[in-house]
Length: 361
Image (cartoon, rainbow, N blue to C red):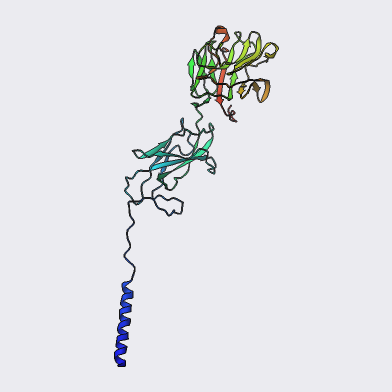
């Protein structure tokens, strides 16, 4: 009887061992290629199984004429190589420590590259920046590309209610009227009373700054109520325009600085003794700056020293629509010798709701 019990116990042990062996791990299953995203983030924080894009332009501190970022596309790691993604672009400061433009997501489209043109931010001219890009699908994000460095364009632009026109590069973003001469590295010379450059602002600049650097203006210049720069609503006669802003350097009487500014509800200008004499030296550059934000003010500086400053408060909004700005001035009913100061040389035009950037010389 004892022998039978031992056999039975041995049988139970054998069966238990066999059952334990049959509970071994199942064969591994290959990862599915249908879902490139993953809830688990990789070491770099990415949640999309895709390669990093490859920046192509601008790179290595290039300075393009216009801001278009181009990158080679990502490919899916497990899914079909033909899978398409959207792409997130990020522009950062030169130290690569802070984002200076809001992240933008663009469709991948066809082809082997993807491009992006910023429209929601403004970069400081001729300054260093970096950029990077990554693939996006739904809420999943791929790894960032390597950061690439570039310099913002030094060329001009008209964007919204902002204009930058260096005029030292042999061209203008505005429209030339009358004879002008571009002097490389110096600016543009307006040859006659009838010479001017006009800018059509896509958006009204209700408050802001209009500044420019001017050479070759003597105390005694030809003409009477000649103008250095101006603004208007549309292209009607500048003298009677309902949103006129004119800044004059008169030749008769010589050296007199005068101005007029008309808002929706008010008009402020210089009258009589308020029209001041300034002894200009044609060999020196002068920075002329007009600002309006409830007070219209004109300031003229030479080598940082203020040689003229005068302003007046005004009522109502400055709301020209359409908004035009001019270097010089179109001829009005006062005749040709009350238009542009002939022979003046202009560079670095800035029209903006923002103050003039430092270093714009």
